[in-house]
Length: 213
Figure 1 (cartoon, helix red, strand yellow):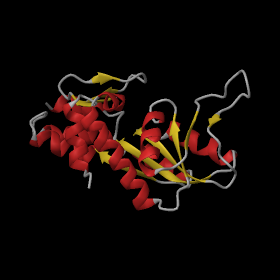
Figure 2 (cartoon, rainbow, N blue to C red; figure 1 turned 90 degrees about the horizontal axis):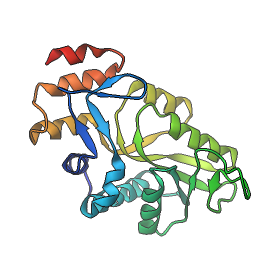
Figure 3 (cartoon, rainbow, N blue to C red; figure 1 turned 90 degrees about the vertical axis):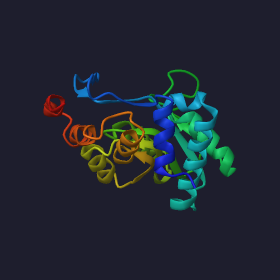
């Protein structure tokens, strides 16, 4: 069984999730953040990739045994959906950020019949906006979207609220709470940094955590 702790250690070891409370990253929105995520790095780390795909397959089987197809989010979820679908011997496809402007003008790639029971494969859940766009596009095309399975979630309230409002759910291999525990145990961060990082997660616009070094 692939646990949150295994995935947390994996992501930290390859820098896919990097914690830097002393030198915050700046997001495109201007928000200062102690965490940087690039789960695409898991694809180029075979041992980590194996854990991720096995874990995603376990989540699909556990929560959505009735699933008939996996749909990846563009672009980060596509490879994970493909590999996980191979493990599960299941069809897959993906949803484009925007419909093509040529050919058949597809937004959804892969043959999906109306009524197909679909699970969305995502790499990262933050505010949930991009994931919900995929869910809505699939529903408009007639899919029965069972839920979302992702590699990592911040657990931000905005994301939780959006997913709930869209009448769907997310199950992640790892979350920020588990990550900071493993990070402190393995000395990526100081034990006292755990509360600072979670304070950021609970209120990203409040930068008081920066001054608490």
